[in-house]
Image 1 (tube, rainbow, N blue to C red):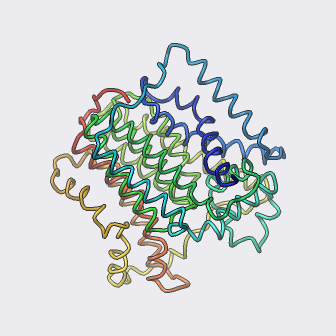
Image 2 (image 1 turned 90 degrees about the horizontal axis):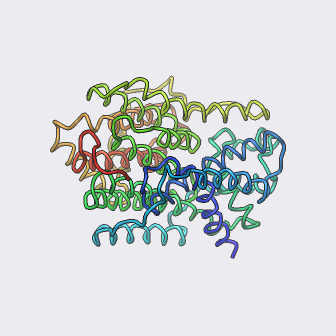
Image 3 (image 1 turned 180 degrees about the vertical axis):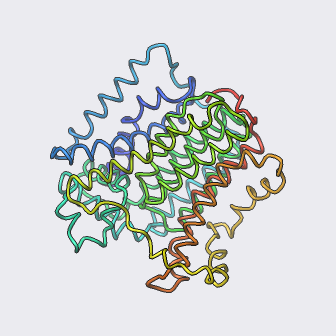
Length: 442
């Protein structure tokens, strides 16, 4: 019962927190599943912001203090939208092959999480530790977070996932350590719903479903193989992938508030989330300029501003409560040695397996090679790829405290997931999308 409350009930409540904003921000007639997926992500973001505000104000975290304001806000937005937004419609029938592929992917990930074979050691070291601490303390205890002996729990790290997991503990009454990492499955399912709905509406029912199914299979295999259960990888992939699905398929002049909020969620999910958000935004700006879309610089301000604002909000909370401010770099990158590159290439290639012997990378790369004239549509995915791998190479060629091959094996399989996600989405847009995003709404 504890695990059910922690995983299922708390997840449903998170979706309710975001239902009103999701209905306002999604295109008219979006599918029910797509709306639910978007609502889940927005609800988690709102819960994080609210929890920081409650702690800053000294208000204890309780079921009522956390849930009631968000339910009131969501309900007000949902029921006061009047005639401007039609109610979400049931999703159209998904092609059998795509449905089967997505179902098998979800089942594989669910089994891997339930059996603990996909669970992250970071959940035991600091994500779960902070979640249990926050829930038990009814807030973020600054005295513990700032204590030198608590450094193992990465107190400076972005707070979204520990707060989401702490919310589950508040709902359930205690931490179900055995099954709590399965919260990553709810992020995966929300991502499939949100991204799949958007792709089917913008790339067509068949093409969109095919891309979404391939994305689901690749991400499920990667999450399981890279031991991502319970850590920040699933929300990071959700937010970056969701933002990319919207930005890669947008119509000229379409509002960017929803993908900008997704990028803010990415920045609060992991330390590298801000880098991913800014790299994706830079790629969208470059694409817009090359395609001569209207106001490319002006339209890039919001997607760049919100993730930066989210990080500064976290830094401001740290400053206010006396927690050490800012992120710690992964290593002394000022002392990196580029001469190490040839020696680490074999380790890099070996750890790009993605749970599929590298096959997950094959199709998007083939599409890229086969469509050089459509390279401009790939630019947002390519800028993110370049930024992520540049940061990783800087880390791997810097001094490290343990064997370099071990560092790569521990970090690369997870760190490359946003790259794989965007390459797949970019391939789908190239293969099935209209260059100006003139497909029906979704």
